[in-house]
Length: 88
Image (cartoon, rainbow, N blue to C red):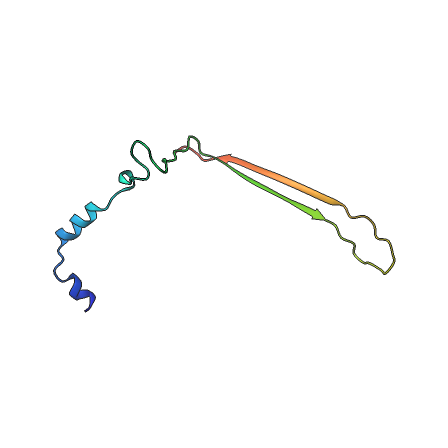
């Protein structure tokens, strides 16, 4: 059986009826009704924020047996970028 055998009796009306019967997100039972399981999220602003952090540890360039090495310094950083999307 081929694909052509399966769709040989399908008309454009059948396809239209099928397409209109497909549920939309507004009709899903998980997001609508009196007690939705997943309430629809509607952001109140178009602000965004990106946070980034890290550490630098300086290591000794060389080491010798039984020789003291200088103490390493540690640097930490953290940046935050904020912005907003323009209103369309």
